[in-house]
Length: 447
Ligand SMILES: *[C@@H]1O[C@H](CO)[C@@H](O)[C@H](O)[C@H]1NC(C)=O
Ligand SMILES: *[C@@H]1O[C@H](CO)[C@@H](O)[C@H](O)[C@H]1NC(C)=O
Ligand SMILES: *[C@@H]1O[C@H](CO)[C@@H](O)[C@H](O)[C@H]1NC(C)=O
Ligand SMILES: *[C@@H]1O[C@H](CO)[C@@H](O)[C@H](O)[C@H]1NC(C)=O
Ligand SMILES: *[C@@H]1O[C@H](CO)[C@@H](O)[C@H](O)[C@H]1NC(C)=O
Image 1: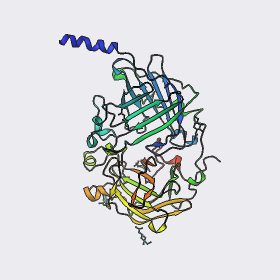
Image 2: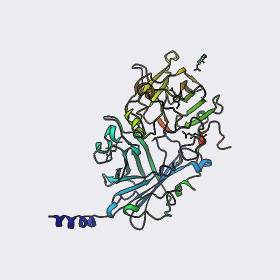
Image 3: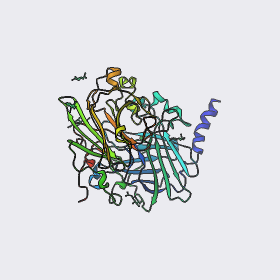
Image 4: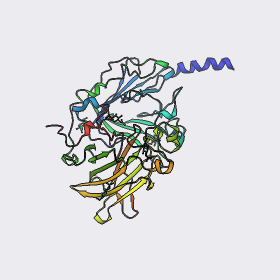
């Protein structure tokens, strides 16, 4: 029996047909993500699938995050390597760019659900994988085993081409609370564009060499971040830019809904004076959430219901919301705490706020308030003295419709985003997404 097994397994491996993507996937694809972790985009995202002579596939993407070509150095990039045979057959090595030099990020996925026109890749742990270092709710939602296939409940990436071969659905989802939608990480409908992406690199080797190389190969932007794709850009509509702000800091976080974040920081008084506003046509509520330990991998953060595992969900956020429906006298400011990864947050007054107001003016809805740097659910309920100025802090925003009858916010859908904001010095970091420099208010992008 033992011999039979020893003999059969390698033979079975050798006999497997090489993995193949549906025909029609290869090519270059372009479209504007209507949902993403940082909010809906206004600019194109470009993605290519190329088959290399050995039969393996290379995926390349550019991620301008709506930053104008002037800020091309801030654009992010991604490269993924799909092996079709051998021990890594059907495995996708994903290299999302070394945004943090201390964390040379690598992800591994496995192809599942391969149909005639679609494939789904799901998260795959590798030997030595440390759950707490990755942004997935393994413990709190058991996401690794919750999906129809291993890993799919934490992260799944579906690519689906239409019958004519001209449209590609690109859908990356993170986890979701039970009976709730999964968090849409990047969802876009892409159109085929007549461009052949170059493959100017050595595909990573098998086994232990199947790894990202941030010292050379994966340290650079993809060819899709240069011409011709770097040429097209439409500056945001006039109405979504704020030319002059009375606050010291002012950034256009999302052009689609005209989301502007403004603040003054008083470190001596340990106070943040913040205003968040959006186009009134997009919303009658605007909200902001703070997570002082949103990036923490510590046991303390996890036990308190926050931290890195909740990163792409809402859990752990103190939320302030301002609504102003048709009648001005029904305007109000509400406070919530998100105790679930996805789904509506619950009323909670742990976060102290002062002088809060919400108003409509100039076609915009604006919420303004002051908050202490240390406050909220973590401090009030767990006695954790964590400041939003810490390097683990993150923030989120959402806009939507106010349900007047039930006095609750309606689901924001894709009109929401997540960011790491350096409240002290928002342009300090020059790495993609971490600096707000490309989004500063009142800039003349194209004279
Ligand atoms: C996105 O690219 C398509 C061509 O692939 C183009 O028609 C469209 O105008 C672009 N959209 C933006 C916002 O640049
Ligand atoms: C991927 O996630 C979506 C939710 O966004 C879910 O409907 C689908 O079943 C998942 N696919 C797999 C293979 O798990
Ligand atoms: C709130 O407003 C009042 C009156 O304008 C002012 O006296 C007070 O200092 C403000 N509170 C904070 C924390 O700024
Ligand atoms: C939190 O700790 C800092 C020192 O790390 C201290 O200055 C501050 O007063 C503390 N805040 C609260 C609210 O306890
Ligand atoms: C914010 O920027 C300052 C530089 O002015 C830097 O020292 C600090 O570490 C940054 N904070 C975060 C959270 O990145």
